Image 1: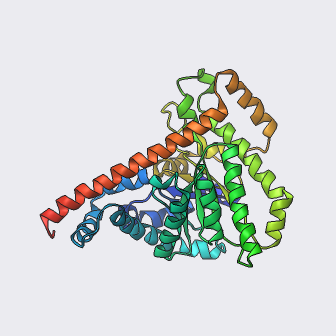
Image 2 (image 1 turned 60 degrees about the vertical axis):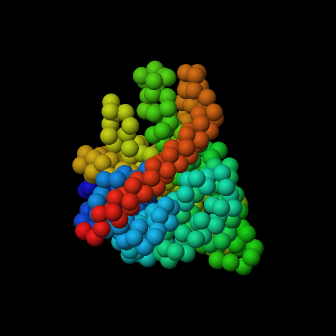
Length: 363
């Protein structure tokens, strides 16, 4: 059996962490859904920057919108929504068949809003309303300003993918924001079913310490942090607070593994996919990692529920000089800044293309 199908059958969803117009129009994404059991898709500013830079199939849309007077973020979101809506259509049958549990696509609010709660809430509502897709998650970072925005957005009934989470504490803050939003909906007599996922970034931990620890500790910290978060996730689902919400009809905020492509050439290209096999979770993986896992990946032991082991291993990293809490905060800050930088590059790239294509006139 294809290893991607094995993951699907054990209860883990595989989502593709990529989107390009060519991927959609060539039939490639449709093939991944059929052959590799891909059941969702995520995007981010860096992915869109690469797509629009390298894929000429955006040029006609950019030209027509530029000639109509659109520019900047408005032009970008038109392009992004065209792609996301098409992707959402491909996953709609999965979304319907699973009762809304799976089959989601994600689109991020502007990363420049990461420190602005009110603006994030407005942007999330506007994007979701414009798309008119029942299977669209709006990505909001789990930053200090993002956490209250998540609560408000869930309360407003807008599905949320919480991004840029790096630690157990980040995850718990996101989960509690989700639950507060649902609790407020129940108190207001509103439908408690509002989808959400919480995205833990994994490989960036190992990149951050690669040159700072002994060889034996490389490419292991992200997995141990994930194990710790998985334990917190399972504990939350067993807790009285969640059981009360579930009894009222609410659905769990699913835990999602993000940043799961291997960054170290010396590590296995399917390292994080194999290590993070776990029921009731999602793994969103780059296209190259998906193809590698489909070709030679193996589904072995499941991610264990063993917080004692995780804590013992984390203590070893502490002895190696890694301050887990400080590094988590820095990774979230760096991730926010990196997405903002990609966003600015993306908007600049669109402006350059707009000017060149408008000047050149019709093809």
